Image (spheres, rainbow over the protein chains, first blue to last red):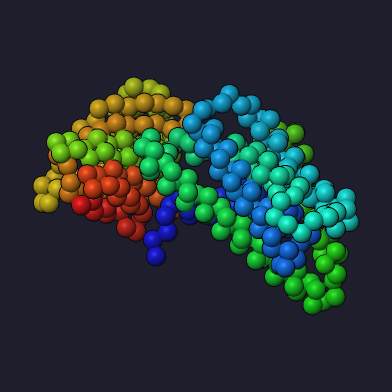
Length: 195
Length: 134
């Protein structure tokens, strides 16, 4: 099967082992959730994808004069916040609703905007000027991002299931995953700050 | 993954062609093609070398007839370069695109083609560099 290249690009943009930010973000975001909470985590991931794609499209179209250092720092801040929130609430961030809308969704969309602004400079120069082709490229890219995120979700839920089979409670698993992602995020943030 | 993009607008008498490549990727490829000479694409003489490189890696046919790829302009940006070209006539075209494939195994050259019957998008890869546009 011939995978559209922008879908492939979106997919590997998430699963890029040389740039951990998306992997960590998705892992930390879904750490407190069980598969049955799909409305919450799927809504948050989709909000992230939409925020990411719309921010990239806007930045490519308008070339806003952004400070690259601040944008990259913002990406790291989203990681630290998302992972830190899991640790702060000891693996069980408070949530008093079961619907599609909620703080996770809004935060994920806002964080998607920051991540999208950071990546716009890497993809923008290659995009076509023809509007039909441009929309198709954005559509495939967003689809690739969503699939990449779902792959991370499947992997995290698989590890969660193995951990549960070995006696870890869901809360302990979330706390361990949150602590791990927070530790790596703080390490990345310190490297960025020193650089 | 390494990417480059082509945007073709097909007319009856002429096909406008814009290729966009990341500057560092193209500098790397042109430098290797020149035996390791350092290449800076903001320099006009190196832009000529880059155009020669692009011509050598893009082979265009209509049927059995090889077409001349005319270069109309070169725009340098620190991130990416844009080379504007054209070939005479419209479809069909057969393109063998080996741009950057010798440098990067994961290179994908994406074609956004606006033809008389709508869009004809395609991808050239190292293992499948040939594009048929009909």
